[in-house]
Image 1: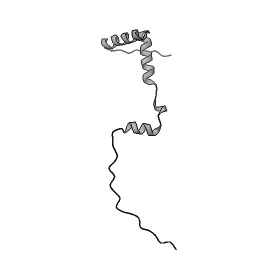
Image 2: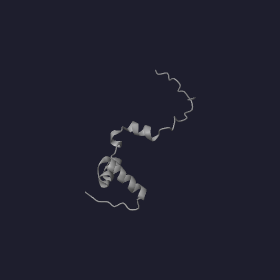
Image 3: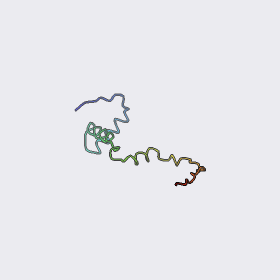
Image 4: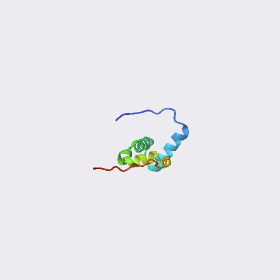
Length: 78
């Protein structure tokens, strides 16, 4: 396993992590490890391509497609 160091966290963040860890009954390190693990789990693999597109373009609305005016003519075959 690797080790990382995160510098520059606000005191409020540290306090909130300690409280959250205490509520869960684990150390602050274990709490942060759990948060990072949950945040980096990829749900994209569980989604189909259509679901991905739907979420990516949510609220975009339907495109403006003008009505067709040039209809094909019939062909007489021998």
